[in-house]
Amino acid sequence: MQTSTPSPLIQFSDVSKSYPIYEAPSHRLKELLTLNRISYHRDFWALREVSFEVRRGETFCIIGENGSGKSTLLQIVAGILQPTTGKAQTNGRVAALLELGSGFNPEFTGRDNVYLNAAILGLSTVEIDKRYAEIEAFAEIGDFINQPVKMYSSGMSVRLAFSVAIHVDPDVLLVDEALAVGDIYFRQRCMRKVHELRAKGVTILFVSHAIGDVKAIGDRTMWLHNGRIREIGDTELVVAKYLAHMVEKDSQFLDLARKDHTPGPATQAPELVTGIPNIDHRYGDERAEIIGIVVTNTGGRPLHLLEPGSKIVLRISARAKQPVLSPNVGFMLRNHLGVDFAGTNTLREGHQLAEMWPGDTVTVDFHITLPELYPASFSFSPAIADGNLTEYKMCDWIDNALTLQMGHGEGQIYGYLHLPCRVEVNSRLLAQPEAAHER
Image (cartoon, rainbow, N blue to C red; front, top):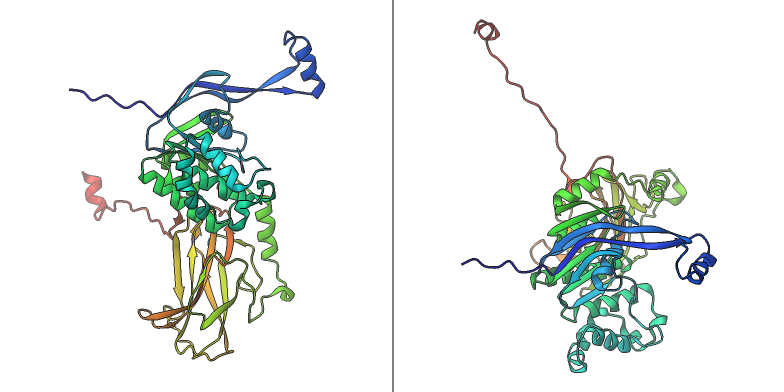
């Protein structure tokens, strides 16, 4: 007895989508007055003959340059747009996070918009009541939930939109770069939630320029180029071809890199640093506190961009409020997915710091040679503890206190980092060339 293969949740058959482009606003009116008998526009084809299927429970990623048709495709999946030609079919409840606050009424409060959006997706008032507390807690926008959405920042809008989307039990979740506007703490939480939804069998269509995100969650990936499918299949293979094709040089990053390497003693970081750029979460017994963190080059100049393979200095300053008999200062380096990438501390590196008494300060410089890492955001979480490597009490820990972008290196990064490697090509050596010649 043969078992039937389940029908795909999303199916595109030769889908094309065009938009009329008018040289002047008056041309649109002229065309209407002629009842479209005379055309005053040219067609722009955002998608051309796109065919693919997405199975239930699959995480399907879409990559490509800006203007390649990614957002148009997701809007067709969501039912916002209809294809010009071809057939597009989506089965099940679709929750879409396509644009900041899309679907929100700016005059309504956040709470009103939660009920409105959830109702549009088919939930009853009773069902929304049961989930409202979870939606509000995940969004973490505080009392703004009772304020009109027009007062929200872009980050607050995407927090609430994502929270609604993941709590309505969607069959299909569409995410289009919206998480890029969130702070790194919220992005990490969102990515963890995406992994939870994957485990529950939710079908996810994920559009992103963050290749690390794509490789982390994608079962299959489609590369769109000028509205057409360039490659589709295994994520590793498609991403490798995409990166090989793309030569992305960000002039802003290059300018920052050149500026960072310009010597200037007047801009060197002081021995004691104060100021913490960001605090996502902080905990500890408060007997000592982190008071400053900065990343500099070897000359002491603060950096705004990390370069793969470069040498940097991570400087952390701390102050004691109460006696700390065995202080240990360290840090954790996290990637943009919230994964603890690497970390160390003074004890791990063989340095025992002196006892600290109320008012004492200490500054520790960690001299680091960065590996060749893929271009993404990396955060430093500093900490000070009291004790040894196995038994200690945390005095102060700050999540994602400093975030910097990793620039593009000269070579391609396959995976997350490039291992230092030396290549030798071994040839077969004939011990007796004369005998070999006779044979």
